[in-house]
Length: 479
Image 1 (spheres, rainbow, N blue to C red):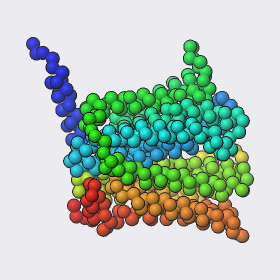
Image 2: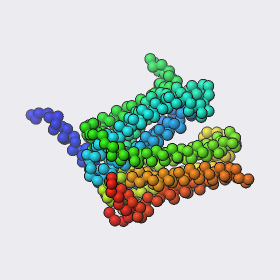
Image 3: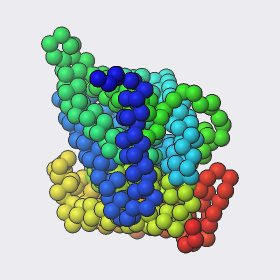
Image 4: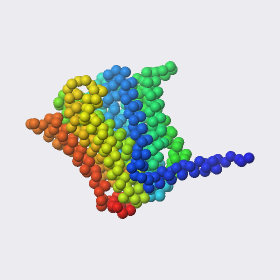
């Protein structure tokens, strides 16, 4: 009879995890590029679809509370989306990138230290984001046009969500740590499982059930916080167990260089996120003088552009890990191949969506309104701008690729150029004698062309990348 040994059991369970982590690393460093990218993309795309379904259902439940609740949620939604983009795509992408580069360079201890630094950044960012929104929410939502019962609903919803903002930041940070190791499946399982729980949490907390009182729109916010909290607990437990291929532990000393390794990419990525949202804000503001119906139609059209973001993220999250690991290993020709392959895949998917919208614009618009003028304006937007959505997908994928390579400057320049074209050329078109909406739409087209072209700069020959801190290598065919 053999005795049970906890140490032996730990060693036994560590072997498969270590082997699985080694297999993932080998795949990212040596596997076929297109097949590996697609395999990494599938779990992320499933997450995006599940979260989109959850958002739609929650909007439906909130709508049952009345127009004031719906208007209040609409005021809060852009801020929640910005926080999501910053924590998952901005700082989150930088976390995945830093860990992948460390693992690709064989610096496993540094990768584990980076995971701890990622948690610290998430906790601080979550507290700061939550406090600033809670303290400044009334002024912000009032400036956005919130009044009366709609403003009250916005504050009730916002205050609950941003009280739990730290859990959203922590959830996305932990998911990004795992993605940096090449593990896309576990974050996907947890995030999809969480969205399924929202189908239960939301109606119960909003409308009440049995001993649980109806909380109204505050219940919708609380259901999101519970989702973020439970997801964070599951991912943290997995990482702290050491069975994920990367052990999250608190024994590492905090170092400025490792914070800079993440924030050097993440800070620029956040600027990119803000500029991307400002493009939509500026364009919408330019359309506003044309009237409520034109504004509604334009808003419905450009909403489809927003939906390209989760699609590109689903495809590109794996690119960050692949490119980071290959740059860390000094395999620069392969990193370049991954970037171009992923960019063309993203371009193909987003272009397919854009062409479908341009050919059948009313199929999308009539989901939301039957107003003839709103549909006309929305169709004009989709028929002019949507056919080049592929350029948006192309540029956005290269933005994620640049995160992996720790070369964000040109991605920020590209996004700023896009914003400048929208603001300057768009305003000029709207004020020209023969200008108007069509002129603004062509300015949006020109802005996307500039964005896609400038995003390619880090990926052309003789542009330098940094496989590890302090060292730079030209991105050429030599490895």
